[in-house]
Image (cartoon, helix red, strand yellow):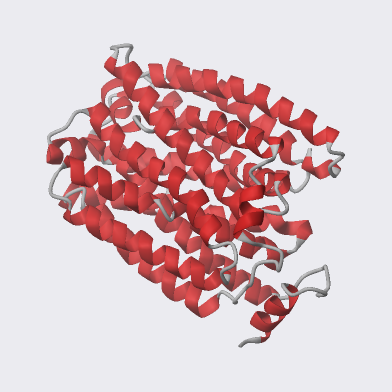
Length: 415
């Protein structure tokens, strides 16, 4: 066992120093980067399919709203799998559990590649999503413990940054690859990334035991918490607007803005660049004010989505506001993850995973509602207007969360 592994194990035993284990900067950097590669793989599978919708429609012989259900099926898998797998892993050593979850994630994508029809593809996408939230929960908790209390949100932002960076590097490349050789090669790309992640985590991440008091029972009891459920509602409402827009970015880009299909990798890459900027700005801001960051970011999401929909027929303005939606929506990530962990200190793994359940419930909801308003012939801009309304509602929920947090006399930075 390495020194870092030994100190991590010691810190999880009764009587250990409350300040937690100490790691060198190099150990922390290598471990968090290894964990963030998994976020990169997740980002590719979650977002590349949105840029390859037209290819999926042609390959499977389905409609655009049906293709939206491929997005929703994965998201529903995350919603179901995150709490269940987090509870089951409450007492497991975190590094080995992260590797197990990555293995399940990889196998789901093998099934997706070979799926012979639409119905099987839906099942495969659901199965692929099951380990998503639990993996991010374990990775976030490992990063937060290594970084320490003063820098935990920034450490979480780096782990989530893998997902954001995938939208700049991975998603455009995989979108172009899918357009050239067939959209199913997206799944092969994710399988390769999952294997790389497993090797990096096995090599660089330290073993890390959960707190001694962490049990399946304590995780389940953590659900009896009003602030936690308000936080979940906040995440669902807040993120659903962004997904209502982004789930249908391919048809909006080609049919409203007038871009050729060959431009889609650049369009999704620009959105991804906005997500990278927003993720790291959000991590920095959340270490100063968690819920204050949420309120500001969500208000900006509403404004920029209205401006995106209103100017979608003007290429330059469409791209500017798409980028700004990516910035403001991604800034929510680190603050929402931190807030949910704060709401349930006795059930940290479950609380951390529920951020991703909520995020993907928003993914499923946004894709579903967006598909319905399109099917109702309200136009391809309609999902963005609906999403802006959801963000405004999210501001109201965030203000209520601040009220509850003040009643609990939480630290100033938590508000």
